[in-house]
Length: 572
Image (cartoon, rainbow, N blue to C red):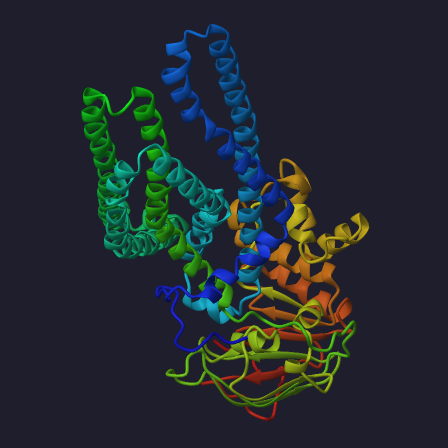
C-alpha cells in the first residue's frame, strides 16, 4: 500500500529491456491479428518489387522491338499488381489501425483501474489534472502497436533484395551509392538524444498545464469571488507559453533531422543521376537501366531513411512508455486478506500512532479506544485534533505507523480492504456527488437495490421532500459535484446512500453541518431507531441527543481513557 521510496513521477528512467517487456502481454493477446496484418504488408512489399524491372524491360526491350502485344500484356500485369497492392494495403492499414486502437484502449483501461487501486497517500501528493494528462500520454505508445516494426523487417528484406539487383545492374555505381549510407546513422545518432529529452519536457509541461487548468476550473467560484480572472488567465498563459516554447524547440530539432536525412537521400539520387547521365551520353548506360537503378536505389535508401526517421520518432514513444510504466510500477492496494460478509461491529485502537509524512509531527499519538458492538460514540474536539484521521485509518485508507486497529478482534491489515469497506458506511461533511441523476448518485452505494429500498432510504434521510420538487425527480441531473443542490440537500443524499448500503458500522463525520434543526433531529432519531443494532461513530462539534451516547474529547492527537455521557451541551 505504500509508495516506493524516493520515486518521482517527474523523473524518467533509462530505457531497459524490462521497460519494453511491459507491452508484450498486450501484443500477445492480439498476435493473430498482428500476424495477418503483417502477412498482408509483406504481400504489398513483394508486389512492389517487380515493377521497376518491368518498366526497364519495356523501355529497353519492348519499345525497341515494337512489340505492342507484349506491351499490352505487361501494362495489364502492372495494373493488376497496382490493384492488388491497393487491396492489400487497405487491409493492412485497417487491421493495424484496429490493432493499435484496441491495445491503446486496453492499456488506458488497465492504467485507470491501476490508478483507482493506488493508496490515498498517492493522490495526496499528485494532482488530478496532472494525472489526467499522464493518462493521455498512453496515446504516445501507438508507435509500438503500429506497422512500424513490421516495416523495419520488410525494409531489411527489401534492402538485401534491392542491393542484389543493384549490383546486377551496375556494381560500380552501387558501391558509389552505398558509400553515403553511414551518414544516415550518424545523423540519427546526433539528433536522437535531443529529441528524447525535449519530448520528455513537452509531456511533463503538458501534464503540469493540465493540472493548473483543472485547478482553475475547479476553483472558478473562488476566482470570481476575488475577481482574480486576470491573474488566473496570466498564470495559465505562462504555462501555455512554456509548453509552446518547448514544443517549438522539439519540432525544430525533429524537422532539421528529417530534412537532413532527406538531403542525404537526395544527394545519393543526384550522384546516381550524374553518373548515369554520363554513361547514357557515352552509350555505356541505357535509359531503362537508369530508371530501374533509380527505382531500386530509392527502395534501398527508403528503408534506410525510414529506419533513421523511425529512430527519431522512436524517442517520444520511448519517453511515453517510460512515463506510463512509472505509473504502473506504483504499488497498489492489495486485496488478499480475509473476506468478511458480516461484522459484529467491535472496534479497537491499540496504541495507534500516525503521521501523514515521516518528517511531520504525528497526527495521532498513542490512541487507545474500544467500541463495543452496537455502541454509539461521539468524538468531539477542536479542528485538526485528528478526528477524521481516525476514520481514514479505520477504513484502511492509510496505515498506522505503530499500533493496531482491530475489528471483531481481527487486525484490519489481515482483512480484505474491499470487504472491510463494504461493511462500513460514512456520511461526510464534504459529500461528493457525480454529475449524474439523483437516483444513480444514491444507488452508488448499492447499485442492485430495489425501488422499494431506494424510496425507503430516501424517506428516512429526509431527502424525499426536496427530490419530489425537482423538475425530473429522481432522474434530475445534479451537475458536477452536485452543484445544483444546496449543501443540506447534498448531505441528505449522502445519508440516503449510507442507509441503502445497510452496513454494520456507520460513521457520521460532521454529517449535520449543512442541516437545519429538524433534519438533525431526524438523523438522531434514525440512529436511535433504525441503526440501533449497528455500531455508530459520530464526529461532531455538537453533542447529539442519543441515549447512552459515549463522548470522547480529542485534542492534539490524543483521547482520554474515560468517556463522558452527554456532559457537554456544545464543544467548539
